[in-house]
Length: 194
Figure: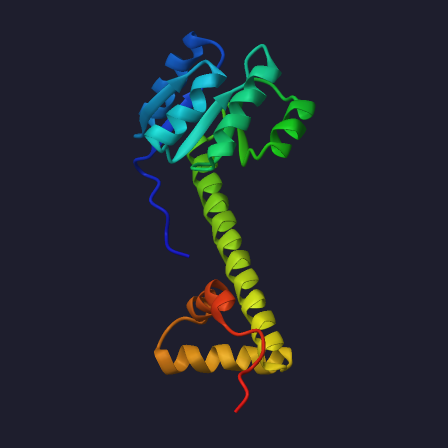
């Protein structure tokens, strides 16, 4: 995995209390980051996330945990950046609910925010790499299944067909598998009689 650049990030901050947004924005700016959006209303957070494309979002837990959870839900649904929860005091029940919704970390006011941001971005990058790997694996498995059915061969032979085609054409195995999976409906159901 390549090194992540975390020295100048685009940060979305969200909190139910507008006055808290200014305090969090100042703390984020002091770390050398740019606050690209400040959101109070959960109805506006998805649009701000999609438009501003922040690197990370910090959601403050205010008086209403439901409000914070709605903010988290909408940011995570966009899936453009990881979410960190800013908490003033420990709240295990809230953290359980926030983690179910996709929060990557939490930080307290007196904690090292930059270290938390760094770790969160690393875990988010790992998460996306795993999702892509699982996606490639699923396509390869599908392509093997198609080849097994069409050529009446076993799994090892199907994989070898994919691998040999990748070598012959100087392409990645995942690309060859995607081509097979994407065009299998064009292939005959049965091999043509000779």
